[in-house]
Image (cartoon, rainbow, N blue to C red; front, top):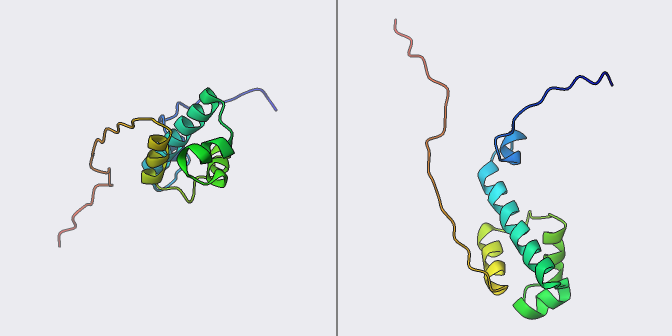
Length: 107
Protein backbone atom coordinates (compact mmCIF):
# COMPACT_ATOMS: atom_id res chain seq x y z
CA UNK A 1 0.00 0.00 0.00
CA UNK A 2 1.50 3.30 -1.06
CA UNK A 3 -0.25 5.40 1.57
CA UNK A 4 -2.03 7.58 -0.98
CA UNK A 5 -5.75 7.63 -0.41
CA UNK A 6 -8.59 9.63 -1.85
CA UNK A 7 -11.09 11.03 0.58
CA UNK A 8 -14.63 11.09 -0.71
CA UNK A 9 -17.40 12.85 1.18
CA UNK A 10 -20.47 10.64 1.54
CA UNK A 11 -24.01 11.74 0.89
CA UNK A 12 -25.17 10.87 4.40
CA UNK A 13 -26.87 7.74 3.08
CA UNK A 14 -24.51 4.80 2.72
CA UNK A 15 -27.07 2.91 0.66
CA UNK A 16 -27.17 5.74 -1.90
CA UNK A 17 -23.37 5.91 -1.92
CA UNK A 18 -23.27 2.17 -2.68
CA UNK A 19 -25.81 2.51 -5.48
CA UNK A 20 -28.76 0.69 -3.90
CA UNK A 21 -31.95 1.36 -5.89
CA UNK A 22 -34.15 2.05 -2.83
CA UNK A 23 -31.58 3.90 -0.77
CA UNK A 24 -34.07 6.09 1.11
CA UNK A 25 -36.13 3.13 2.26
CA UNK A 26 -33.05 1.15 3.27
CA UNK A 27 -31.70 4.11 5.24
CA UNK A 28 -35.00 4.54 7.10
CA UNK A 29 -35.15 0.83 7.96
CA UNK A 30 -31.58 0.96 9.27
CA UNK A 31 -32.36 4.03 11.40
CA UNK A 32 -35.47 2.41 12.88
CA UNK A 33 -33.55 -0.79 13.60
CA UNK A 34 -30.82 1.24 15.32
CA UNK A 35 -33.47 2.84 17.52
CA UNK A 36 -34.87 -0.58 18.45
CA UNK A 37 -31.39 -1.81 19.34
CA UNK A 38 -30.83 1.37 21.38
CA UNK A 39 -34.00 0.76 23.40
CA UNK A 40 -33.06 -2.88 24.01
CA UNK A 41 -29.57 -1.87 25.14
CA UNK A 42 -30.78 1.02 27.29
CA UNK A 43 -33.27 -1.20 29.11
CA UNK A 44 -30.86 -4.16 29.11
CA UNK A 45 -33.55 -6.33 27.48
CA UNK A 46 -32.69 -9.73 26.09
CA UNK A 47 -34.49 -10.80 22.93
CA UNK A 48 -36.65 -13.08 25.06
CA UNK A 49 -37.56 -10.27 27.45
CA UNK A 50 -38.37 -8.05 24.46
CA UNK A 51 -40.61 -10.83 23.12
CA UNK A 52 -42.42 -11.08 26.46
CA UNK A 53 -42.91 -7.30 26.49
CA UNK A 54 -44.09 -6.87 22.89
CA UNK A 55 -45.24 -10.24 21.58
CA UNK A 56 -42.76 -9.90 18.70
CA UNK A 57 -40.80 -13.12 18.14
CA UNK A 58 -37.43 -13.25 19.88
CA UNK A 59 -35.95 -14.40 16.56
CA UNK A 60 -37.10 -11.13 14.99
CA UNK A 61 -35.25 -9.14 17.64
CA UNK A 62 -32.17 -11.26 16.92
CA UNK A 63 -32.51 -10.48 13.20
CA UNK A 64 -32.74 -6.77 13.98
CA UNK A 65 -29.67 -6.95 16.22
CA UNK A 66 -27.79 -8.66 13.38
CA UNK A 67 -28.96 -6.03 10.85
CA UNK A 68 -30.75 -8.70 8.85
CA UNK A 69 -33.63 -6.42 7.91
CA UNK A 70 -34.79 -7.95 4.64
CA UNK A 71 -38.07 -9.26 6.01
CA UNK A 72 -39.02 -6.11 7.92
CA UNK A 73 -41.17 -3.36 6.49
CA UNK A 74 -40.88 0.19 7.74
CA UNK A 75 -44.38 -0.21 9.18
CA UNK A 76 -43.37 -3.30 11.13
CA UNK A 77 -40.26 -1.66 12.57
CA UNK A 78 -42.36 1.32 13.64
CA UNK A 79 -44.86 -1.04 15.30
CA UNK A 80 -42.05 -2.77 17.18
CA UNK A 81 -40.83 0.60 18.47
CA UNK A 82 -44.40 1.42 19.55
CA UNK A 83 -44.54 -1.93 21.37
CA UNK A 84 -41.38 -0.88 23.19
CA UNK A 85 -43.15 2.28 24.34
CA UNK A 86 -41.57 4.62 21.81
CA UNK A 87 -43.31 7.29 19.78
CA UNK A 88 -42.12 7.50 16.19
CA UNK A 89 -42.29 10.74 14.23
CA UNK A 90 -41.42 10.67 10.55
CA UNK A 91 -41.00 13.68 8.29
CA UNK A 92 -41.27 13.13 4.56
CA UNK A 93 -39.83 15.39 1.89
CA UNK A 94 -40.60 14.71 -1.74
CA UNK A 95 -38.23 15.84 -4.48
CA UNK A 96 -38.27 15.07 -8.19
CA UNK A 97 -35.70 12.51 -9.23
CA UNK A 98 -32.87 13.84 -11.30
CA UNK A 99 -33.04 12.32 -14.73
CA UNK A 100 -30.69 13.08 -17.58
CA UNK A 101 -31.95 15.72 -19.96
CA UNK A 102 -33.44 14.31 -23.13
CA UNK A 103 -32.31 15.96 -26.32
CA UNK A 104 -34.96 16.38 -28.94
CA UNK A 105 -33.75 15.62 -32.44
CA UNK A 106 -35.40 17.54 -35.23
CA UNK A 107 -35.27 16.51 -38.89
